[in-house]
Amino acid sequence: MKRRTAVTAVLTLAALIWAGTVGAMYQSIRRFETTAGRGAEAPAAWPASSRIVPARDRWTLVMLIHPHCSCSRASLQELERIVEMSGPSLETYVLVYRPSEFRAGWENTDVVDAASRVQRAHVVMDTNGQEARRFGAFTSGQTFLFDRDGRRRFSGGITSLRGHAGVNRGSMDVVDIVRSKVPQGAHPVFGCAIRTSATESEQRR
Amino acid sequence: MSDAIVTNNDPAIDARTAELRDEHLRNRRVRIDRMFCWLFLVQWIAGIIGALTVSPYAWEGKVHTVHLHVWVAVFGGAGIIILPILLAIFRPGTTLTRHVIAASQMLSSALLIHLTGGRIETHFHVFGSLAFLAFYLDWPVLITATVVVAADHFLRGLFWPESVYGVANPEWWRFLEHAGWVAFEDVFLIWSCIMGQREIAASAARQAQVEQLSEMEQLKSAALEMAMAEMQSASA
Image (tube, rainbow over all chains, first blue to last red; front, side, top):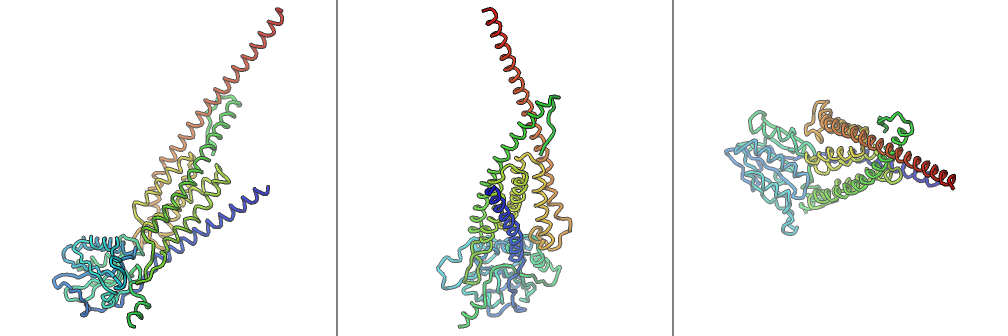
């Protein structure tokens, strides 16, 4: 009789843990996936101080990534799709954040491998996030699209959630702008932070 | 779950058939409960390894912390499987255990799908799990699993639809389309459960008849031996 009561108590406790876990898990996953990163404080035109040279005869797309941000795999999948759909009318740069004090090879990740597989994309190391600062980007996956005159036409992310590839407003906007269907666009960006207030104050010192 | 027994118009055989069938089903279901215990543990470990491999850390510039996926895989995964494993240990073979296992298995699928970033390929886990659940030969278990899948899609479609459908404003009935493919598989699995139960019932009926015949033979032999013994004692 005692054992039966003990078993019932254990099972009741397990049922409460089970129900609580399901609720908490859904809630935490939802909060994580739907919380956008800090949006860019992007200049309206191509930053003159940038070492990247924009194309003058076609669109220039710039994406900034953190090499260890797993969510950026989805951004790169979307980028691949955009490049396929836009064809040669798009010049693509993927700027990879790299702190100078980290050991050599720190940036060699599958995320950067995925970036180098994007057709015609130039993968450029962004030492200490200097280019990210010039473009006003804070979050991995931040994408900019500039026209032939260097005017910014799109700023934002190209995924609908953190780490989820698939049809979304951001990537559709980029393709539509390149095809001259819409004049400009913006979309929340989802990913790890490239720059934080801590790194900024450290940089200033 | 009781089903029709091949009747012999003999209450004794029918009762024995039901007894044999229930015993067979119970033994089978206890075995499958135990198999699910191992499967849950394997899935849990696989989820943790997957999270550690795919997204071990979340980064903020140069600083990294353990990624939410790792915590979810460890604690969320453990929370999902604790109840079905304890039920399989302390209440094996019961209807409640089977239904909790079905619901938890579908939640494990949802977790694995999430941990792999919603990969289409991971959705096959749902279909494989349904086939595994069909081994119970208890079709309402498949309904529970289907309801959990549909509820997961419905709720996520309601609160953050991009995670399931990739778009922010899908049609309200889109979850029915996804659940419809699960229901498509269910039709065949439910049919196989019913057929499986009938085969077990038929096998039980044959065994009951054989047992009765054997019992009658034994009674006849005993009666014959007794008659022979009486004849021998009378002639002496």
